[in-house]
Image (cartoon, rainbow, N blue to C red; front, side, top):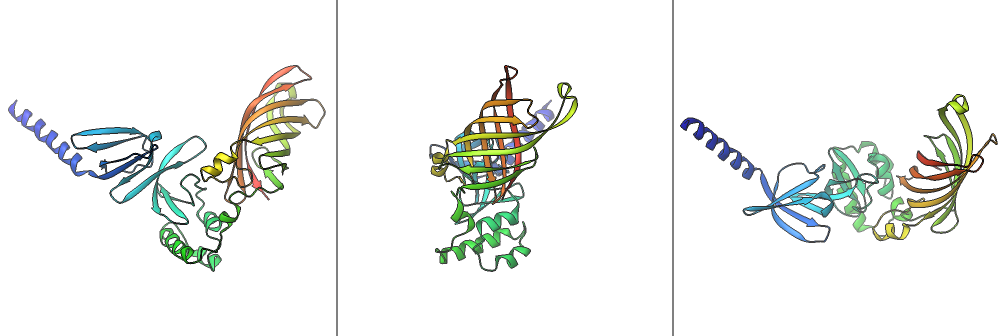
Length: 310
């Protein structure tokens, strides 16, 4: 019995000693800009939902939504949008005119913590660093292993050439009047015409592919979808240092769809999200309700699309 008690005591002491040795100096900055110091576990925080800060003999547990950034020894993490509805901690390796982040081993570039771009490395470099001399030759040798060195070098060059502007800087809020686009998920082509800073006319000719007994099993139906979109969060995105380039933002729309075989048409009201990735690629998600006048029938409207802006 004594041996068992000694073993348990030794095990608990070992665990406690390991836990203490696995703690590093840490800082947590909350969304309210409160700064708290203490000790943090020496782990990767990319996917952390909660963070425990040890302060003397006690600890404080923070939910991810309440944290703006944290520091573990010399490693900085910032909370950034990972998708439309999901935030994650990114390790911020380089700060400057262009910031470099890592999530796991994947690098991301951005000018602001609030607006990370897609992680296709070379296309991101062309977006944020295209004003760098001889970039087309330099970019051939850039990879995940040496990207830290390149971004550090670019930022140093940028500070001595403040008059130079990258594609990102010149187009962060550019909205073309005529924007021709092609969609992939629902094959089609169309245009988005800028009526004002927040209103557009969005018109797409698409092929709907699906299955339905009423239409004779598998079917392919061409249809024309017209929308008047109102991008209501443009000012908010600007204030948060997020791009509104090519009408990136959230919108509400009045829509009218016409089947080109003349059998039906639909009126609808939708809520949507459109984002531009890099210079040209985009994705669009929307959901709403519609009405088929010919059948006096309400319907659910949803759209998941990805495509290319020309």
